[in-house]
Length: 171
Image (cartoon, rainbow, N blue to C red; front, side, top):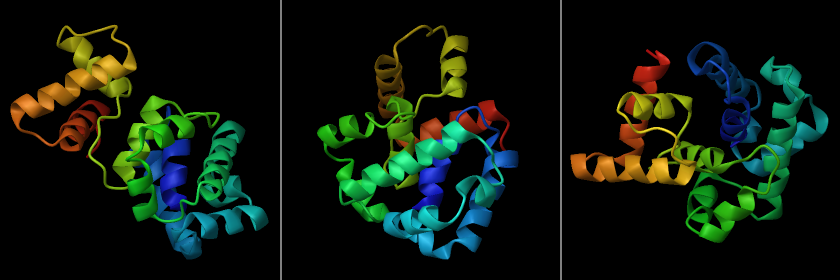
């Protein structure tokens, strides 16, 4: 869960494959007890996340701490807990009250714990603009992608990931 929290906290405006992914893999190796939110919170209390991640960005570190504290306060400790917890719209809305967490972050964290959602980012916005669909609010553009996935018979998260990989240049 520490890697999930760091993924959603550190990924905005970051090259995932070259910058973030290697740091997440290292974090999982050096903080194996961070598999749970409580284990991650214990590490955060005694160690510097910026040092562990080799990523000195105060706002992103603060977001990781805030998400961690929020999830602990709501009894979410494992990937399965978070997967189920996100079933409730009220919980999704509550997560958005955390500074640095917007609708894309909520959808993205859902994908990280096995939900199949569309997390609209700059790559998906650019893809839509190239197709003549631009300037839609987040929720509406996500609905367009969800409808496209349904019409094409594709998994929503699979469609999102395929577009993201293509547009981001990920291998």
